[in-house]
Image (cartoon, rainbow, N blue to C red; front, side, top):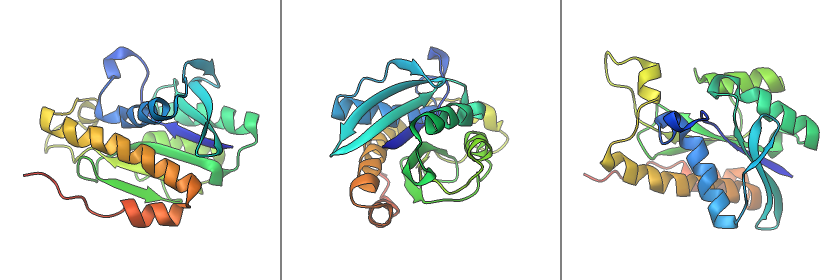
Length: 192
């Protein structure tokens, strides 16, 4: 079974913010494959289903971003999931809006949600899909930036990125992470 977790913050006030791109990507995946993600379990909203022949657990941690690992740890322990069967989707300020970057492992790179997952799992060896949200403007507080919403122009790019992130997760499960990296880790042309 694969665990696909999208990171974000619960409650309406954080809906559609830069920090919640993981939740948005999970919603796309759930809609596409008819998976209901309303079960409250493992400090998360969860949904079980089958995607292209693979059993999956879709997870939206409800612990707030900085404690995302608590939720993922509970689900991993309960279902006996290995780190290689985890795919985490989250925001990255070092990538242009809409760009994707797939990694098989690595440090948190300053992302508190990933930092907590690494601490809870005791491992950096889990695949992840970074979704670019753009760099913070000079002199703007980082927290204020990641909790801000996208402009209308950015939102169009992001809606496509959420579909791409969902498709990338499926490709990682069905064709392997290397193939997904080759396909999605290319620089997208941004619209002028």
